[in-house]
Length: 244
Length: 244
Image 1 (cartoon, rainbow over the protein chains, first blue to last red):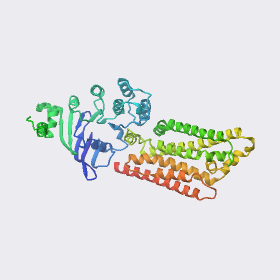
Image 2: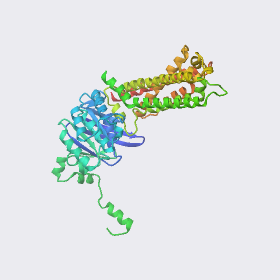
Image 3: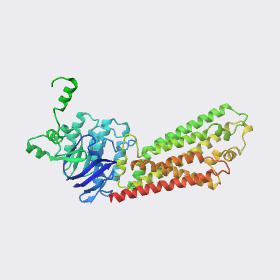
Image 4: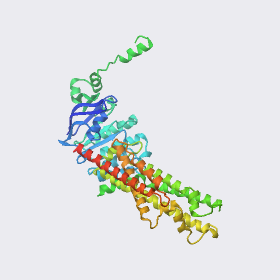
């Protein structure tokens, strides 16, 4: 389990993450939702040790270091692959550094998405690059797969395929923490939703709990964020002078 | 050891073909100025290989290729359109080793550039001896040219140990500083040892007999190597301390 205790991160005077306490057990698909700049990416980077932070983050009770970092993989819309390397080159490189790298899963997914094996990644389209980024994260043999807006730039059919593949291939011990704005698209397959706003966790609910409450994820998020549905019509009314 | 080899191979796969293309382009450019010089025929100033190299601005081409090679090499690890640092920081070898292997690879590339340039000018000189009118050529022509031309002498200093030391240190400082640059960027700092190494190489590679340029160049190279290695080790130690 990944456990965050009182995690804080500031950029200058701006506090990007405030006193976050969170537990991410194995075997869950978790959605991480929040507006732009809410702290989703910062939280993921803190877990991966890419940025300095206050508080503690542990993986099965141990700090996350080079010794256990291979248990966490990362797919980001910023892309973490090597643009001059081919897909095959990546497989050979990752095999050496991630002992649990699954060639079966890697080549299976490459074939499924029909990605070229011998072409350098910089020649891929944005959609293909996103696909490859996620394939690498899924193939590393990590127990925790962090995904930060992995489908930005992919069309809806492509994303749909990915969700199906994700559900089909994940092993019971694999955890996915998926940061996205596509709430309605992912609400069907996540088991838990974490809401972050201005660096603080403002909501943490399982889909079962939502079902028991007789509500859906979108309504829960709107309620948590105190979303005012009449806000747009009021603004339009003010601008046009017409009655709503 | 395989992991170390894969990091070295990553550098090779990412840039080596580009390095070869650059060297090929340099040879073409130098051959073009050689042909232009030969077509002009003897002038009032004479007609010899050192004149060819002076008037043909081959030293300038060499300097430009060195700068281009530097720009090419510092891109590995900071490629446009990707954050490869996210992967490099999660490898089974520490970033200190990535820095070491990148330094080794870059140094070999600069060494190749040096050797390539020596071979190219020797070939051009050989062609010159073959083509030039008999009154301009003796058995000693090429040998003397390497003594009379400061650029040629800097490239191949024969028994002048101090020049060999200066050149080796220049190559080493360029190799190490160009590996430090992407590492510093990944760690969020902008250190510019590579600029110092490049300026030193351009300003002091060619020196007149009896000048103090050689001593200054050796000093700058030693400082560049020391600062680059110290900063790389120090930052990595800090990172390890933070994540221990």
